[in-house]
Each structure stands twice: as structure tokens, then as C-alpha cells.
Length: 131
Image 1: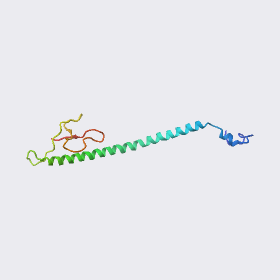
Image 2: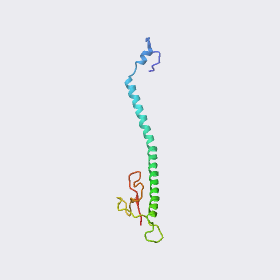
Image 3: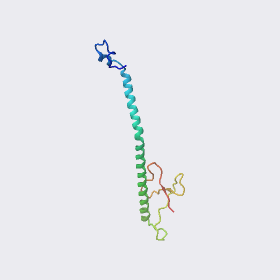
């Protein structure tokens, strides 16, 4: 039944008051809060993917830049420490440190002589391998 049919308000002098008194304000507020919650949850779900991707790309770029800097600083440190220790005309790299990385064989952590970040953006140590 429609609220605006003439038969519904037959005999009522103040028909607007009767319309305003229908329903429950608490139900309306509960519905509004529920809709805000649904909109907020769906927005977070939609934005979670791009934000996570941007975060991973930023961490990967930061790790790559740190690895490049560590490699350049290792070359500079090798040439400043005399470089050619066996007089064969080739600059030898800095010797590996004794600290090992769990799960990585054949290398170690970056030596302390190289003044760069020793870990990537995820907290894992960079590996250093020299002959």
C-alpha cells in the first residue's frame, strides 16, 4: 500500500504527522552505520591490491639500489687496499667475512670494510661471494 494514496489518509487532518511517525529512527541509524561499514570494507578490499603492489615495487627498487651501491663500494674498497695482492695485474676482491647466511652456501655476509647496508628491505642479509 502506498503512503500517498488518498484512502490511506482518509479522515486524517494532519496527514504529514502520520507519515513522519511511521518507522523507527534506530533502525534507520543502524542501517546507515551498516552501509558505511559495507562501503568502507569494499573500499579497503579494492585498494589493498594496488597499495600492496606499490609497496613491493618500492622495496624491490630499494633493495636493487642497495645492492648496486654495495657492489660499487666493494670495488672501491678492493682498489684502495692495494688491490693486487699477488702481483698478477688483476685487482682481487675483498675476502669474504666468516659470518654465514642460513640457507645460502658458497658465500657469506657483506664484509664490514664495505660501508653499506647489509640487509635488504625485507630484513634478509645480502650475500657476498668472492673467490
